[in-house]
Image (cartoon, rainbow, N blue to C red; front, side, top):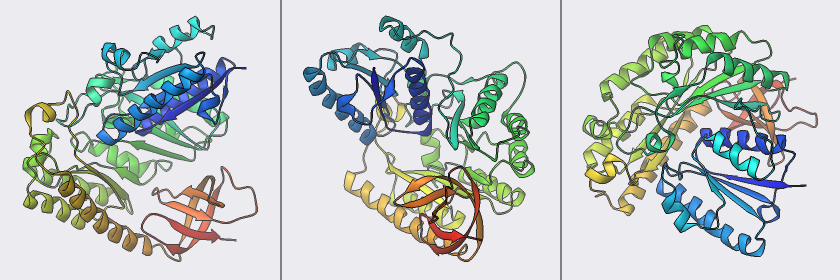
Length: 422
């Protein structure tokens, strides 16, 4: 028996890719290993969007050198955004790695598998093992070239999957017990622009909404400049599409947004938020913010803080800027904000957001929320509300995959605690 182990870091797209890789190896008759040092095949799915993630991936690959020395027969594969079109430097740095392949370059994986006497593939998507909530990539790559982002250089330009292929995969997942579908794309709003059929994300959501057995549909990540009124109204109209939108703002200052090449102003972002809230009652909004971008003054940082305080997001993902080799910001702009100042600004926003999230969640105390149960954590069942709030509760019964009504009796900034509403 051949055992494999996948180590993953980074975005939901990486997690979806790892699920796909796992399905490929299981289809070849391999079994997963919980222990990396007992695996015959080790796959590192890397991320370089932030320096901290890149360092973790490189450290993990470095750790595998010792395992390879102890067990020369171990096969090491590396994928994810660490792997660009030119792997010569990686091969020099890590000569013990057996294969580097770019994100979603499945043909290279299949060819390697043939060499290792694993089955080949006709290129059709392998369906992952049953799960309550499943990631389904619908568009790969990105055409935006934000000045700080390495993704377009590693995942390439936007390529939409045909709708028929997505519907086939989702139907298969539903038959295996999946109840929630999360559609993925670096810029999910661009879905379909490169397809001859003329479809778009709103049209895809409408088709998925009609599939019997799906309870919930989510999608991410959105780009403010590409989110249309048609999509917003579709979210409100389609009963299975959840009232939660991730809408990265990145900064609350127009000059910073211009240097980031984001393609919108703060005023346009505010107008979009207002439109979303006008059309979708009770919608939950989350966002992404970068602090310490080159040249960000205290006043510009305070404008970001003011935007967060004004909009009152349900969740904010805050990251300190780190130069990414190959991006225009890295080559043209000086990284002139000190690490300590970046840390201070990050902490200030995190403290503000914790207070906002607690206030918003306190409003749910005593209410009854429908929760799709995903598993057990810390001895309690856990799941999420339609608005993407993590909810924990206790029950002696089997709850996995069920949608249950939970009465909330304790709240915090990051999760809700409750009990079954019998």
